[in-house]
Image (cartoon, rainbow, N blue to C red; front, side):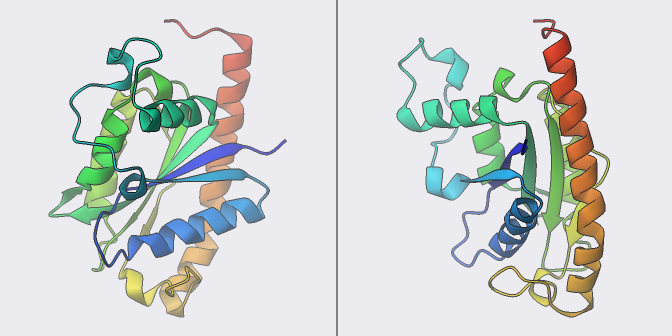
Length: 196
């Protein structure tokens, strides 16, 4: 049975380089047999957080929130593809994530970061680790960092150059770790109801 994985991406820029990495992750996970849904914060276009999904009376949340809540609840795991902005996380992805809380609980999340420079979005990945943990996800220890992204992935998300070769080598371990945690979380949820 394939794992249901949401790949979440948050850039609102007109020239989005990170979409290359999102496409790479989606294509490689699908090639492994996973059922992958792409969640693009820009395409969904949620307003800045005023009211969380859970704060709406049942059945009265905006349609985009209702659909996304169902997708999150139905997922077995998550991959957050994040750029680094001024040593921090992308506001578009953070805003989308903050609209929900309980929907994320007891599932694993993996972080894939990128930047135009050589640090590969490592500071954003570090910041996301604590944020996702606080939101009830188990963050897997394997991460992927890509930078400079334009020298690692082509416009259609295919590996190029030495950076692309390194990315191809590191992806199987990353995906295996995510799959292990997905299976562990599935087994635990089947065995025992969540504590609250």
